[in-house]
Image 1 (cartoon, rainbow, N blue to C red):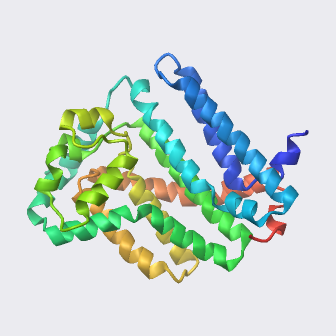
Image 2: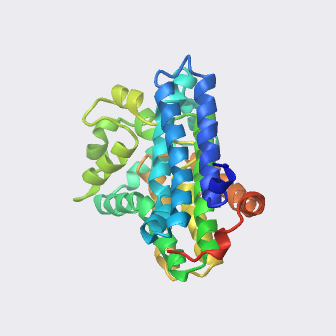
Length: 318
């Protein structure tokens, strides 16, 4: 069967995802001598790309509302899977070298102190609790905004929002590749003592466990083992970058959820430093990446639609 019979049904975000999986596959092949699990990762990438093609084709050939909903909403878990793939790639490629010392030096040069250590004097359990809750809502905010676009029934607007989010996440992943780092939880503080040094009220330990699990950090291990096991995902701050992207969409399209996003988003960005996940320079980089993302996304989105897609804008949302 001609490949165009599959590709004509793809969303722009599908093309972007397949392109990124192709890039990851090429990196795995180039650095196969360093990446122990490269063959498994390549197989996963090829399988996911094939499934995306089949899903898009089956959705439109069958007219199934279930497949339509899956095709519209499958992106979040797949983007997370690609994030987890970086865990097996970045450290071996860089031969275990991290760049936290550079990021720490920049923060000290700008502020004269280590911001996370300076903020410790203002910590308070109730504040810690609120900021940890806000930080943990990160992925749920995308579902909230996405659902509002979905309810509007405008296919192009919903797909453009999804495309921009996917594009933004992948840009941040490229930053992780270029500047691997682990963050001040490990370098400037004792990770194992975090719940004692920066306690919350009730939910904080459980929410920290949830975040740590997503970043591949083993439970109940000393600082050195946590450093060896954690994801390299500090520069830029993806939480800052993508929260700003959400705020932009809320402002640009006057979403009803914008006040919730603004309020939670500000707390979330503050939490990235207060909770010792990021250096301040990571936030600055995240804001810079966000500007690049929203500036270039429209042109890239229209280029993909104009080149490949022939029927998407004529179909209603499921």
